[in-house]
Length: 101
Image (cartoon, rainbow, N blue to C red):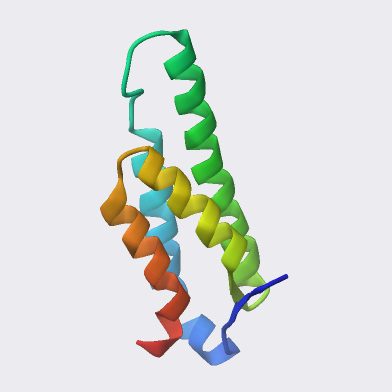
């Protein structure tokens, strides 16, 4: 249970922003396609999308516990970069400083 703690007031104020980022990640990850054709590429692509979605679930769980989960950030950003979504990965990384805004 590591991560950046979020004060309850900040969590209430920033909930909509946080959830919008997570929903964007889920939608964009699911819209990607394998970089190459073939069964192996499709299998790895499905696994990477699954990692991104599981990372999002972990982010939401951590958020509901009042923190931005470090392991979830790492898992999600790694998967997004593998899916060739570096801008979205950068947005997710910025969630660590969400309460500083």
